[in-house]
Image (cartoon, rainbow, N blue to C red; front, side, top):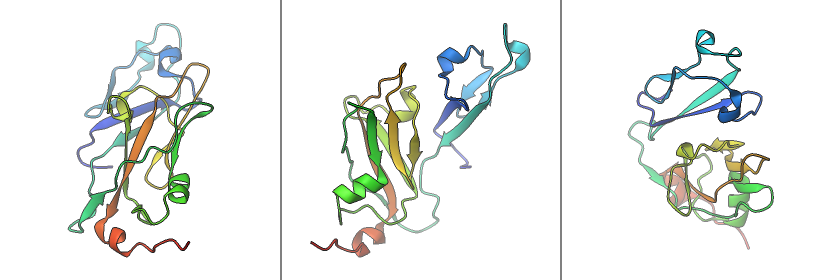
Length: 163
């Protein structure tokens, strides 16, 4: 857990949207965290929730870190918007995505809104897997772009893909 998170992401464990969960929240912010009290609910108990915090890098001491360029390989048509690390590396060989990114940032392409502020649920949002938003009956994904936080030497020492 980082000392100063910049956002919080909350989701139900069973995949129901927060709006459909029917719960009232005592707190849902990156400073306090997430609180759902059973005593505050009118009709049911709190659902099972999971949270994660968005942290600003770096957490790597004095090692120089750099953001990659922004990548937008997919549009949210079909099943969703898939900006996964595996597909990005496959489509952009030798293009500066380091072997071990330590952070990821995702924003909407049209308004540059941080993904964590859109209210959408994501399948992946991690530096080791990349980013993925799946279209659901009550969710049509927005178009997202991603970038990765890497040790700067990885850009210089990354092997060039053979043709």
